[in-house]
Amino acid sequence: MELNVLILPGDGIGTEVTREAVRVLNHVAARFSHTVNLTEGLLGGIAIHKTGGPFPAETEKLALEADATLMGAVGLPEFDNWPPEKRPERGLLGIRKCLGVYANLRPVRAYQPLIESSPLKNHLVEGTDMIIVRELTGGIYYGTPRGIAGTGDEERGTNTMTYTRAEIARVSRMAFELARARRKKVTSVDKSNVLETSQLWRRVITEVAAGYPDVELDHLLVDNCAMQLILNPKRFDVVVMENMFGDILSDEGAVLAGSIGMLPSASIGARKPNGAWVGLYEPVHGSAPDIAGQNKANPFGAIGSVAAMLEYSFGLMEEAAAVNRAVEAVLASGNVTADLKGKATTEQVGQAVCAAI
Image 1 (cartoon, helix red, strand yellow):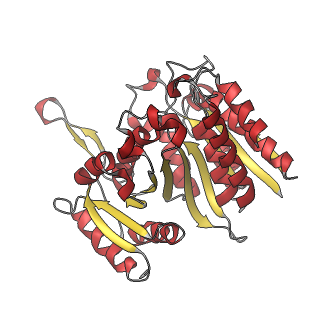
Image 2 (cartoon, one colour):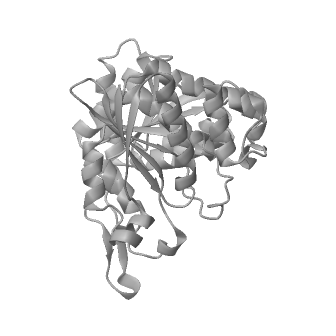
């Protein structure tokens, strides 16, 4: 196949982990006789520095033309006090909306060699294997009205959480389809005892569940889910929730995996004419500017995102499996970065994964 991929390294350690992810992508493509055509664009803080905005028009054009997009991370401390609409993170919201990637899939798996890396007791973590499905293009991050207005004691910040039936139904169907290929259980997370959006969410997903009689559905309030992720993570198979809840709880999943650097993600939209998914792929972690340029960032999340891209956007299941097996082999070897109690550099991990493919 010919794989046309847009690379958006972003800020901080994004450039370093993306470099190793691209190394793995090129290696697995060569191993299986595919051709990779790479273009590179700007997103986030570096885009602000070079173009004045976090999501340049040229990046939008490149993203729409590519078969898939691989991202690093965005965000820099120098922009922390800027208005929300001008900060690097607005570029991330922009590209998600542009591509229409409405479901963010975040696999959380406790690898056996990393059991000791988790702060939780081994018997709680061992065997954890779930996918968190986060609705990505609706909810409070996109709702209007929003903003800060007024002065003095009357100064007020406003954000609006809103969901349509259609938005809830499509991400629900994604969760049930994933569960059918796994252990056939979906857990829906909401705050229906307080929020009207959650009451609609629970009603719609229950209706969608009727079309999947082979899949079990249960409901958890978001505060209880936060607790159960720590107390009994093995109970979960596919967990689906709205945008802000998913943003928060999927990072909690990093505790189970041993390091936030381990978590890949796939943001999925509509199917293309060839049946592949429109996809945006990125590790879950942030730009970590405090360790940028030191060659010690964990690239496994970025490399796992390459495996997800091969699977969802290109349908290359064997190639994706080869990358995932190589990651497991390198983890078992102990050739890992400092966050996983190893001594390897970012580059050495990327090279080791290539050697294991």
